[in-house]
Image (cartoon, rainbow, N blue to C red; front, side):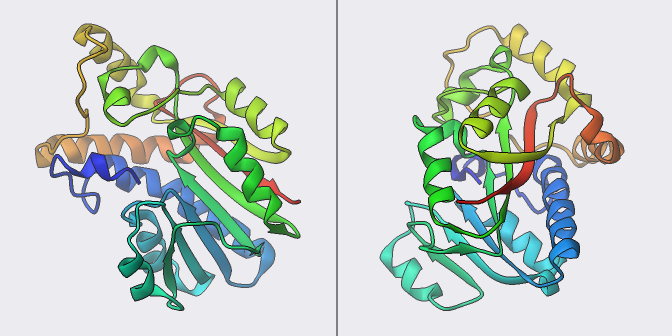
Length: 242
């Protein structure tokens, strides 16, 4: 989770965007757990605040054996304070990725070498592991928000599929999310016009607006995997091995 998005005062425990985004992740973890039938290791790459992992720990603690929060921004003090705990902070990937789901929530777009990151993860894999990836979709939505968050690119299903196949990841599901709000976001960014205005689109909003957007995304959620057309986010789920 990008810490810059929290600087405007957004509370992810209430905000429609984060509360909607965690639902496909929780659903995927449940699916893998039911297949494996043993608690899983979760590795959150580019974890930032660790919001999504803490939400998973609250929602489905019985399905989790260990959580690694991986982020180069953690201090040595933060790392030492969590060592050998259920949720452990680290600056680097675990040496052995086993019985795990690697989570990358809006991470790959921050990396010049997205292929290099996926390859490093696969190289540390022991046996079959799983991945859950989200990335911002469509360069037509590029705006000062992307500049503010230091993105290198936005993706489509086609470009994300090509990257994952090249990285030898097996895709189980690939779809767009937030399709219901895509037309409004596209129009708003086109009307804004100035793509170089560096600012975050993630702002606090009224309870009414937040509630409406959360309800709209909840209606979309059960049908998300059939959305092959458009959305603000692209989601990939699947497996990988060395």
